[in-house]
Image (cartoon, rainbow, N blue to C red; front, top):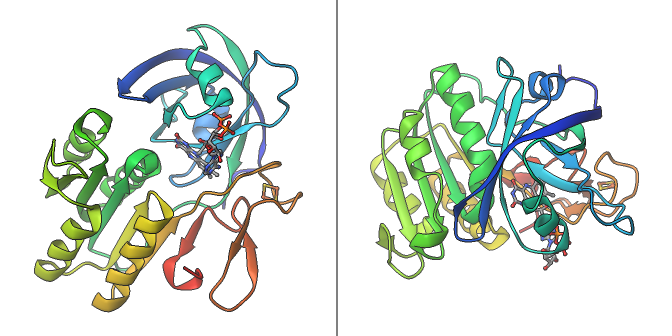
Length: 262
Ligand SMILES: Cc1cc2nc3c(=O)[nH]c(=O)nc-3n(C[C@H](O)[C@H](O)[C@H](O)COP(=O)(O)OP(=O)(O)OC[C@H]3O[C@@H](n4cnc5c(N)ncnc54)[C@H](O)[C@@H]3O)c2cc1C
Ligand code: FES
């Protein structure tokens, strides 16, 4: 059962660029690190602007219970993430977590594929760690707009991915094209029990379609603008295929792709 969501203090251990527009921050927060499951997220208060009261929801790539640290790879896109990128080693703040539901391990699964687009790679790396730990063999597809923005392929290789297919929109690394092109080929030549994916919504819709056509179960990690992060404000609705809505923060962020109205 998931740990109770609560507010945790953290201190910045490191905060460095890993690719163009992408930073990797490591937080020291032992209780938080011990409570997180792959696929969940944390809601971070970034100090530096008293007018900005909203926290920033971020997935993590590694929650290391032994070291008491949480690693997050994030894109610098606006004011909050810019202030986060300026947090210095030793600086402190708070994070709410664990938030949301983890990636599920599909019962009896022996072979999986993980598909990451852009900064969606963060929870996908956490998923790969979960699969490695559970002894589920996996392949990986990692895509970015261009070589300079790519992160995670080597990490996924190091975690034991059998095949790591890299794609870039402009062909500057790996094959030129989209992650869905590479996944389509992998689905043709492999039998997967489940596919896990996070990235731009249009990409996840494509992954979901390919998996449906191949008869493979697919889990997606969705993103929405979030105000509270724990199911109280109703800002993060995700439309479901049956016409209802679910909250991304509390019911998600991980959904069965078949549930979602793409
Ligand atoms: C569950 C969850 C997990 C996430 N995990 C990660 C992660 O691991 N790494 C990462 O880089 N980002 C992640 N995000 C997205 C991250 O929360 C946003 O990039 C961040 O809140 C932007 O804040 P800002 O103040 O810098 O930008 P803002 O000034 O708030 O926005 C800048 C731009 O980003 C868009 N934006 C803001 N928030 C979101 C959002 N939640 N989803 C989509 N677009 C948004 C805005 O529309 C605007 O175009 C996650 C979001 C959610 C909901
Ligand atoms: S962010 Fe408030 S309900 Fe999801």
